[in-house]
Amino acid sequence: MFQYRIGENGSLVPAAEKGPAFVTVLSAEDVRQDESFPHRKQMLHNLGSIRYSRAEIFSDSVQGVLRFPDKGSQQKSHLAIGFCLERERLVLIESLGTLRDLPERLNGRLPPDAGPDRVLLLLAERESEEDIFFLQHIEERLEALEEQVLTGKGESPFETLLGIRKKLSELNAHYEQLSALAEALGDGGVDPVRDPAPWRRFAGMMWRLKQYASLLREYAIQLREVCQAQQDARQNRTMSILTVVTTIFLPLTLLTGWYGMNFANMPELHWRYGYPAAIAAAVIIAVAEIVYFKKKKML
Image (cartoon, rainbow, N blue to C red; front, top):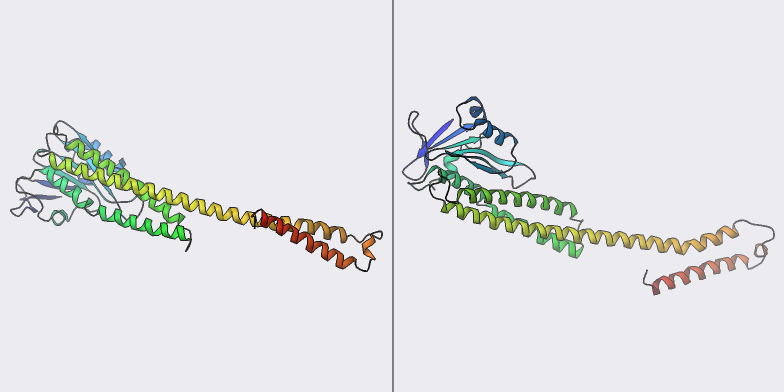
């Protein structure tokens, strides 16, 4: 367990052991063993089962969970914390020691008169401040993949586009959840929230990120459809060529089948020019078919 208070420079500093704690950091095991923790069962359920950010507003507190998706892989959270926000105290429940550097994360950003809700807000802002650059990086990757698709250079980026679309869908849902959570805390009717205006601004920022991620997801889907259409066109072209080749050689196969039987009554069998005539017939048939397919633009 770690306890902090606001220092003179707007940073979190360790609180006295017996003094009032502004922010308390607990582990999930601490909550599990503390039967006096408010709404303990609900908090443990949120930490263990809920896979998205959410908040529940009670008469004396706000409880919930924040989950921030990893920027490098699908369906993995690099930060997952529970919180219990009261009027004068914020309790954070960490996993795997993710909040041991909490004072360094906030780094003097707290105003002297800040309430505990401001710590929660700054933590959410700190984990989201680089997201716009991450989305811009994804947009640049999509533009490069679009150029690759249109020029036909390199291997098909179909699987890469599928992975990008999955990540953008995950981010889109994440921003929507954070926006809804911030709107709930910024509507002015939540007692532990002293200043709802910063929460409303954060909700607006999350909504804009959601819109950006949604546009990029549509972009990725369109590129994937173009890539799929090109693959289908190449397959159709290959099948068309195979069909033409098969059609060209089908009469020749019939011709060789006839003259391969060697019946005694075949007049061409003993004819002096029978073999050259068969060759000429095969060539004429093949050339006629090639000319026909070229006129039909099948070759």
